[in-house]
Image (cartoon, rainbow, N blue to C red; front, side):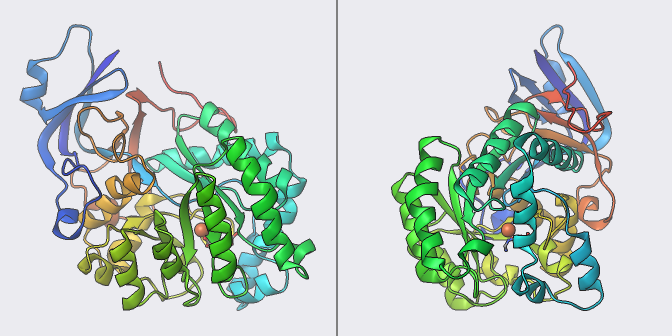
Length: 426
Ligand code: NIG
Ligand code: FE
């Protein structure tokens, strides 16, 4: 089946070197005015002006007129925690009244509150809950997500979360990249025996995850009061030995050493970095680690301490932007919201933000050769946004811009009738 999309006021191809973009390259979106694309077999075959593309279309090719709108690669959300039971609206209300995220966590709430609920939930229920969030991602124009476990924290409950992600990958049109985050928090029953939990992670959980091939990446929440640098190093090194690639929650609430550890272990990414300074950025640059910035969590925690994106770009770091979608610190699935925060608070141009949310994000997930830009050979994963200038996607905030979403060249039904029903139009 072949498909042509014509009448794009701007076709953002993001065509460029086959690697993550840095410095000035981040402002170059390779836009084709009055653009068009031709796809077949789920892949992009050609992009060009309307005239160029229309000239060579095969008989029977479906033609979609974008009506003078922006067409861009689907967003790649490289950091999410979408599998969890319940919400934390109660904590949200307490924070609105003055309690802090850390106080609530120290008193047994926060991540551990979601863990208690998630343990009680069946795999089927988790698939239904996360399936609803998958629809939200799609509706905002996201076509690929990285998804972490981390609300189970026992062997069986972590495997249950990863199997949930595997089912979502089979049952929803979204593309999923699974990450094992058993080291998200020390669970209630190990509070007096931290070393015992680290042993459980290394000796039991990681070998099972690797054996069942349930995750591509391993992540650790390296933070004061959560996992120390030494504990995180032991867990990540064990994961690396089993063939998993690494991501690290680093220097979020304090300068806890996570970025330096990510550099030492040559992790794919160091995520958050609100508290990272010059030396940390230098180490990440030297080791080729990509920073994943999550301004949604800064905003939702009511903080003003945003990461220093400009300094990272100046150092040549291949920055990524993601939502951090989770029930505590960042309850948003919206990449357009993240683009708005990036331009307003991280002082990134809309073009830089777009690069970080697409092609750079795809490279951080090992998917750079197949996603993140509209270049021949890559997946035909693209979005028709309801605007004529791509900068409007960051500028008008608090609404969704995606009008149609295509994955593998097929249009996704964005509003299903009931929960857990996902369809792609034929
Ligand atoms: O990335 N930092 C640790 N984990 C999440 C928060 C998860 C939660 O609060 O449930 C984050 O912000
Ligand atoms: Fe996170």
